[in-house]
Length: 248
Image 1 (cartoon, one colour):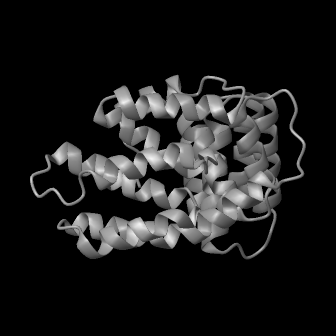
Image 2: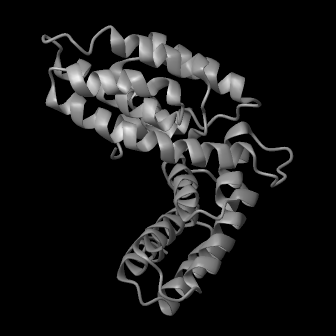
């Protein structure tokens, strides 16, 4: 799903606090589900794409709230919006236990939007199961970092460019400025843009890596983006890199 806007930016900035453990993150997310407004909940659910959270302790509550409303024909616009993001987040869990619920929603929900989101979430489960498992089993050693930065560094170190892209999106939207995280993203960008014949996924990941390092505003990364622009033939990469080099 797409970026949510101003409220999203405020939530992502506030939620970029350093959690020591994933349990702390889950506690905070559960509190958001219980107490926050719809837009804040939606933004939190959207960021589950890159959070690396798979715990049923969180997703069981999402599922419970969703099952209470999905058959209701009198939902408000905001309730439909929230339920849509709840549906998609079950796919981000990568947990097969939610497949039956998504199948039921796809079959029985009155709203076409719910059916469409359930279809996409069913597709996502398999992908996110593999991606989340790869991050959880990563042997890449990260010391002294928050739970989020540790997750993003492990994502960047994965060989799958789609996993790297999730980390780059997180860095950009959350304005992550950890020095080691930025350096790793820069290394991945350099390696990727030096490869010949990039496919569409590789180009898209490179573009997001440009945004991930560019948002820092640091001279070393702006200079790197200038090098990327000079060395790549791909318009998408040039465009995203240029958005930052033009500011300095």
